[in-house]
Image (cartoon, rainbow, N blue to C red):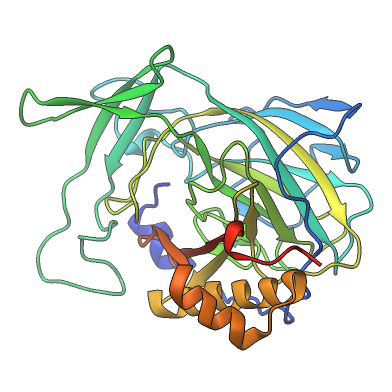
Amino acid sequence: MRVTCAVAASILAISAVCFAPPTPAQNPSAAEAKPNSQTVQYRATIDTVKYVYGAAPPVAHLRPGNILESNSLDCFGNAIKKPGDTLALTKGDNPLTGPFFIDGAEPGDTLVVRILDLQVDGDQGIGAFAPGFGALNATNYTPMLHPPLPEKIWFYPIDHAGQTATFQALDSNYKVKIPLHPFLGCIGVAPAGGESRSSVVPAEFGGNMDAPEASAGNTLYLPVNVSGALLYFGDGHAAMGDGEIAGTAIEVPLRTRLQVDVLKGKRTAWPRFENEKEIMTAGIYRPVDDALRIAFTELVAWIHADYGLSQLDAYELLSQVGKIHLTEMVDPNYVVIASIDKKYLPPKK
């Protein structure tokens, strides 16, 4: 993702939304398409994208079980194309495809998004410094006397056959290939309480989580806060290091293939991921230790509800085999993913 100084300052004033304690759902285990599912196609352009999560006329309706084939623009709106282009060419940060109205989804339900396939939709990715943004730069949270880092832009050629992107140093002749791991930096639903939240913000509704877990083969669970859920996605990444410390990943447009479903009457308070091997919970807040506490509290609750261990037994087990992953530390909220391998859990109830 990318965010400008002005946007970063403005979104700090937006209030957070509190959700009721979760009742974990009885979740399917893998991102596999249901048979005989209808496919809905939609093509996003710079003229149809949105820059907030919130109530808006849907671009399409999906029924539970439908497969959506669509696309997303990169975080710059596909505006940066060649050396000499600047960030001033962008119309906004993290343009979002959507929203998609999921028929039958109502507050108190859980939206299921199976990520079936993600492909880089172009031949290059972009990385950039935005002055006043990044983990090692002065921010509104950590003001410094030194001037902001200058704007710089890197171009990453994409080798589709070899499934790599190439980093080329700007100040030397050094190059290195980076394996592709396409994922959606932004995916979320409309917040509760009638709020609209910036596409730069991660929170309880998902949003700009910058989580590599939002990749093909994984299933994402999101709270439904409004009728139809109103699903948005964007901010495609070809690869990203833990923390996204300079403020961007290898930013790319994506071709997406998603399948949606609804778990009726099953409420989850925070985003969750699952695949055949692991269950994973997101903690999204600042400071990072509170994000971690949210993630592990959610994971304890999930294990207790679905796998039958007491909360204290689950807590102790996670102390021995749980894992954490800091997905980003540059947005208004930090994001931590906590996980456990299913081989350590009893059979699901």
